[in-house]
Image: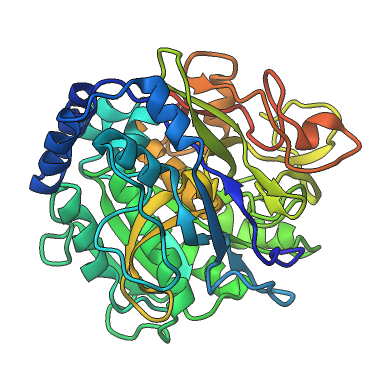
Length: 455
């Protein structure tokens, strides 16, 4: 990581275009989210007539404050930090939307105060935004998405159960074989030391897999520390245990050791490995810089009058916070990457939501960061979302490096091209500024279904 967090960043919130209350209810039912809690909320909205324009106007008032998760401090050489940002105050776009639909005053997020209900995007929102509702309902059975993080989250399985129960998703437990938690050596009993900050990161990752690929099995591999070597060893263990999709929501400064880390930890043919592009604006970090991973940038979601119902721009909060991107100083350019100004590996490949103002709902109950329902942002959300889209698309070819798949779909309707916004200043415009086609902050864009993520 390259810089420290601004003291109190404020972000303009955003939300999707909202139609009638009936449409909102239908979207929940299509996504399989018709729980009692959602039915009650849907009933409440039917009694208050409100136009999409009025809801959008209310949502535009949203603003939040946030902080780096406890695992996000600038790491020393040879170590990584997580790319997670936790909302600590203000009114999220989700909360503004709910208030507008019900005709009530929006609530606010209170720092370190438990919330009894979600304050950010849920499964139906993510599936709608990325055209995944049908695939999420039908695909993913038998596939395993692995999450690699540092240290132990003692409440991981319990918190996952709370998230899935609230949203009406099927049980995913150790007993039914859907969930498994191991150390970097594969042990289920000798686990690392518990850590509150990394527990929040782990909850974020597990919940994003659940939201995007609810039928997938989930493997959580916990490294004994946040060193590059231990995290890399955990990646190898995930692959050894059969995961074909591995998400890494962490990163650190590039170094001359990266090319050796590539071959030791991240070079796994037939496995889709994703890595967060970073949260500190323009600049490259590792392992997103590995030629063998899919580097995932971050976007902000807004309401839209288009048929999609969503639009995206590069996520940038300030000069030191936003999605990472850039030209690697060390890693060779993969053959499928064809931009001409960066002679080495360019970050990113694709992207997904990361703006904390349009952040995702997460349930975490462990330690000082564990305050119940939270809203998280950062490219720590983007990486597991994209890993799960790969899982929805099916098992990669045994000799493939799936980072190349989106390049074969470049410029097609399988990807939502992000053409506005920047994450900083750079001498080569597309390294930090969105444009039509490929650019550094968002790659080739965001998923529109699964076609861009299969060979």
